[in-house]
Image: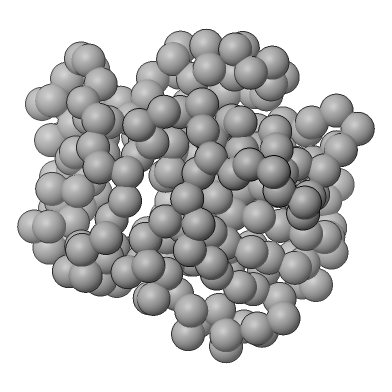
Length: 219
């Protein structure tokens, strides 16, 4: 099945609210567990950047698991960020902050020791914007973990995944999930992207609907 792109930003209030209120605990836990497995020696504290953070659920979970990290989440959707700012403030305004920014990131002065991204890549019209941005903002030796959806073999397979994991969610969320699956990349496509950017990262399927990319940049 060929990839069918979708809009980069989830800017509608109803759409953002449905996403923020959905139960993504399984996927979020998978992300945190993948990081711990990929980088077992990491203890923090350090500077953490989350690209495409949405309402910030994963970034806040990361901050709670690795105390003392200074965490910034960026997302291009103000509607999505509005659902996370209150929770981020309750954790610690000095530890977790959210900002409205879009990729690519250019001419950045700040460097980050951990770079995270979940479910952003399939939204991007140009996937190079993610990998270029990581190169731009990564400190020497930075740890990187990117997780995203994996495009199924057919539209019928995508519909089956939606029914299995989001069958009880609002229709708007089911539709978003379906379109996101159709917009996602396959492993071979992402491996080609990594090769083009000379990023020596591991790329593997990690669930029936997710893939992950992780690695450490050269010191």
